[in-house]
Length: 398
Image 1 (cartoon, helix red, strand yellow):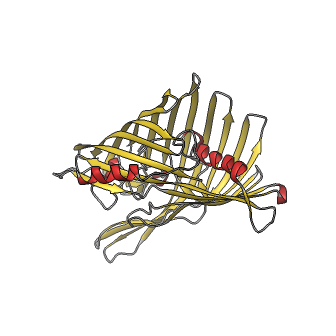
Image 2 (cartoon, one colour):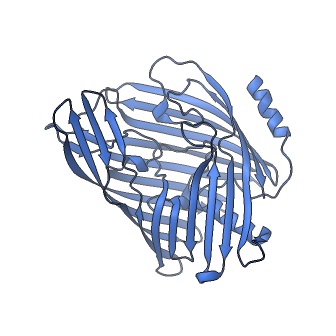
Image 3 (tube, rainbow, N blue to C red):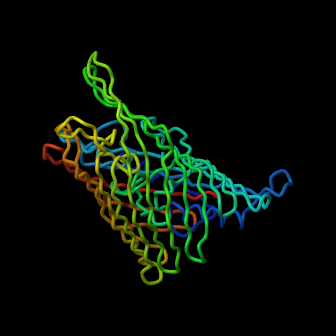
C-alpha cells in the first residue's frame, strides 16, 4: 500500500511540457527527437550548430508474484524466474528515465550527434548508463555506440517493461556502419561491430572463457514503404573458447557464429501496427534480449565445443483504441535446439508475454499499466513461471 500511495503522489507531481504521440522506442523515438530539434532548436554559441536537450522522467511501480533471482529486478527477465520457493516482491523505480542531447550542423554534408542516457546500468542500481553516443554523417555513415545493424530498431515493440520480449534481437554497441540507398524505399547497410565476446564460466576444477579477435560483421537490406517496413539481416562472428581443466594445459578452439534475422512491421488501418520477428543462429547468445547461455557454446558427445543454436521470435500488435488510449499486446520465445552436453540447470527455453493499456492524460504525461508473464524451462525439463503488474507514469521534458 505504501508503494502504491507513493506512486500516486508521483503522478500528482507531474507538470507541463511539450509532448509526443506515443511511448515510442527505437528509431521512431529518435526521429521524434529530430522533430523536436526542428521546432525547439537552439544555437550553440551563435554558430551553425543547433541542439536540443530533451527526455522524460519515468516512475514505475512493480508488483511481482515471485521475486526474480539475481540482482536485476527492475525489468522482467524470464531467465531470472526462480525455480524454487520465492516470496512476492513490490518496488518503486525511476531507472527507465531518459535524457537526450541532439546536435546538428549543415557542415560536411550534414552531421548529427546523439548522446542518450538512462539510469539502467544493470546490477548497479540507479546510475547513469549511456545507451547511445553516436555521430551520423548524412545518410551514409554512422560511428559510435548505437543500435546494432542486426537489430530491427524500426519495429521494436513498445512494451512498458524496460527489457521487452525475450526472443527479440536487441543490442546497443560500438558500430562503424555504412549505408547506401538502392532506390526510394530500399537501402542496404553494412557494419563492423563490437563483438563483446569476453565471458567466462566454471569453477576451480574446470573453466571456459571466450574472446574475439575480430569485429562482428553485419549486413542488412531494409525496405521502408508507406504501410510496410521490413528488413533481412545477416551476421558473421568468430569467437575463441579456452578451456582449463585443473592443472592441465589450457586448450583453445575458434568457433564461427552466424545468424539471420527477418522482421517486419505492417500498418493496419490508420493507426494500428502488426510487428513480427524471427531469427535463428549459432554462437550469437549476446544479441538476444534475454539470456539462455552466457558463453553461447555447448560440448558435443566427443567433448568438443560447438556453438549453441538459438531461435528467437516475437509477434506483437499495437492497437490505438482512441486518440488518448493505446494497447500493446504480444508474445515472444527464445529457445535452443542444441543437443550438446550442458548442466541440468541450464536454460533451454524462455517465454514472455505482455499486455498493456496506455493513456495520455496530457500532451506531456502518459500513464499505463502492463501485465507480464514468463516461463523458463531447464535442461532437466523443469519449468518455472512468474507474473508481474507494472504501473508507469512518464513525464516528457522538452
